[in-house]
Image 1 (cartoon, rainbow, N blue to C red):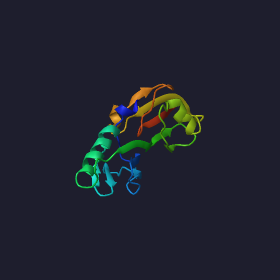
Image 2 (cartoon, rainbow, N blue to C red; image 1 turned 90 degrees about the vertical axis):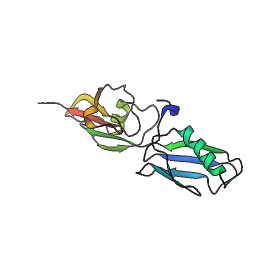
Image 3 (cartoon, rainbow, N blue to C red; image 1 turned 30 degrees about the horizontal axis):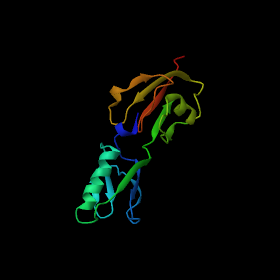
Image 4 (cartoon, rainbow, N blue to C red; image 1 turned 180 degrees about the horizontal axis):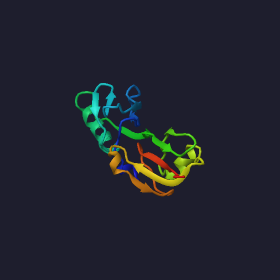
Amino acid sequence: MTLDLYRLAPGDVLAIKVYREEDLSGRYRIDPDGTLNFPLLGRLAVAGQSADWTERMLEKRLSQGYLVDPDVQLSVAEFKPVYVGGAVSKTGEYPYKLGLTVQQAVTLAGGLNRFAAEKYYIQRFGESPEQRFRATADTPLYPGDVLTVDERIF
């Protein structure tokens, strides 16, 4: 996944820098309803948008009566976490990093437990459980993915 293809999601933390406006610069979390609460502008719907689109939108909105020619730089400081469950040592929520694979997520979760069948399934963020798919150890994960490791049948 390249960052320009990534769509912002609830739970992501954005690092926003507004040139020469320290009071507006900082880290902002996207709320569960998909909005960003930004000073002067209030709540802005950003979930589903790219970081570039959001950066341009902030510049446009800030230029409408607040700042003259604002310069905004936006990056994703923290992505929505991934969730690992099933036959691993420590099921739970783990931080997402660019390039994270199934094998790396399993390692973060303490490795496979003794009941693991080494069959991996992924449910992508925003998709129904029926749309989960089989994965390999090298399959890349995306923010918000749910990784399940199946157990062996004895």
